[in-house]
Image 1 (tube, each protein chain N blue to C red):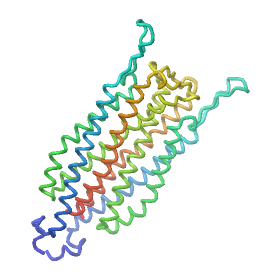
Image 2: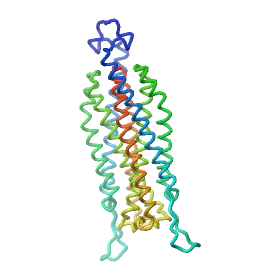
Image 3: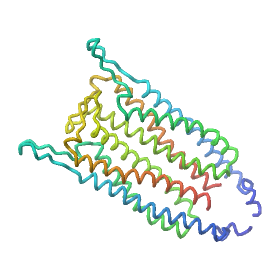
Length: 183
Length: 183
């Protein structure tokens, strides 16, 4: 029982294998979440639609920058994507050194903060997309998706990556906690 | 070194004190977050304004149920509040038994899920409140806060409890992770 001071050596080989498996899964989910948020940011950031059936003097154009909430969506997804890419080296370190407790704590904290950020982006954009589709009778806000159909489709599609990242970040927090409990 | 099998006895008294302090802080933050989300749900749920300067035949009334997003806000805050209250007994158990790893893992997972839920509620409601205040020129959505001034104030105020709970839940996840790392 003296060997517990040497960390890894006190674990059974099976336990070490499970720890390593969790760490590798952490890395894979991080890559998927980074790609999801990046795709969301790009899809929303590049969408725009000009309605050309009006005269050439009056043009109706819809871009994400017309809606502050959608601009927030692009910025927040870019930040989360950048964070996830920057956290990959740390995740690789955890595969090799499974007892790095402090860096795991730092990752859990930032993962939770980024979970809040990506959820805020996804759900506020969803509120706007919902309004664009349905409108609101009480406030006299009309649905704009009849006119801006491709803009609306692109907007709705770009939410997927963001919500996927949200679910993956919840799992990442759980996996980090499991590997903290095992170490 | 044989004593590490007995859990608590292998820790120095100072370490145990820190663990207990973190657990007590966890309980206090949980109570505050529960009150914050409950207050948000009640404030948003009970707000309504009837504009009485119109004729008695046509009445303009604004309630949270006119906006699906605000109804989601009330429901989500109620769920998070109920979860936080139900998690209090478990949090008390952790003050007494600091090595309860599995129940801490369960708490971290649900805390992360509830963080996502309360953030979604707060930020989608914020998107609507922002629109109500500012409107949107491109989509021809007019600001409604000139007419529904007290409704808007109440709506804006009820966001505070929700965002407070969001920050507290991030801290709760961090504290649970710290106590997992120490145990």
